[in-house]
Length: 354
Image 1: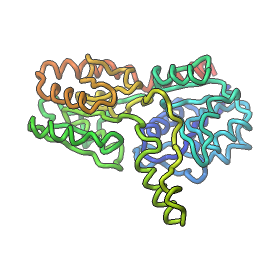
Image 2: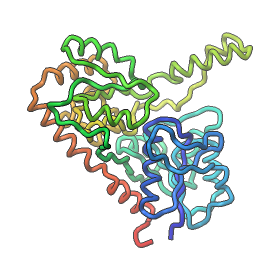
Image 3: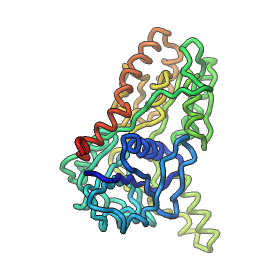
Image 4: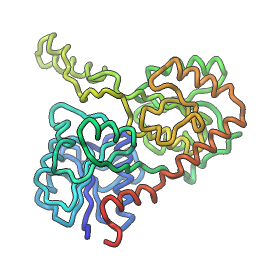
């Protein structure tokens, strides 16, 4: 009988993966299991970007506490997690990857989490990413354990009917370099655009989705390795500490470079469909779990030109076509329910019947 379930991660900073981990830990607790989100001690703090943060524990404190009745679901590539993977005598050890990117650098073990024979199961949030990883790293079996999306309502916010919605919603996140294209087309079509500036609370996103007609998903995944922001940080840090110009200009890669640029699961796009907005944008692999020309104005992955075409087509399309896509999208994302996610976890961990 499983006693406790420990889900691990790298930090509780705002992210789609962080949202998923907090929600799944709480889901396990609702189902009667003792569960925690376990983080490296230096990052062990409650999430501040969700309304119901999961309880946290430090990974270092688990080393002598995990028993053969416990399950550990690893979610990141930190050195602390790898040490726990090697030493803990758990009933099951699972690696649950949220995409196909693998971080490298200080305090990280990169591909070791995938190559270790000590992992009993490999999970991913999407089929496209799972197929890529299992083929590249020779993993024989995998399970798809997706996130879930419930309709958000509150005393302050309800999903508005279509005729009361207006404008386009975008997030100031990765891919924002495409915003000038969006802004120009929206201005030409006389449609207002709302930019949700980073950082924001998850409830702010949900409330904004409830009142906008369109949501644009323009995350193109990892395009710079390291990212431009981290290059700048490395440059400033190196120069301020007395390093040479050559050292400052040679930032080390922060991710394993993969042949395919995929996203695990575009979280905000799926939530937008669940709240009744029409989605325009990129699937980037993981989005193919529900995105298609029938459910969205689907643009060619990473193409700003095609994104502009699809945006203009959406803004000029008929109300009947908008409604058809909304209905198809809502039907497609409803399968990502808390019940379905728990059924996958329950089956994978053998929890039925204790």
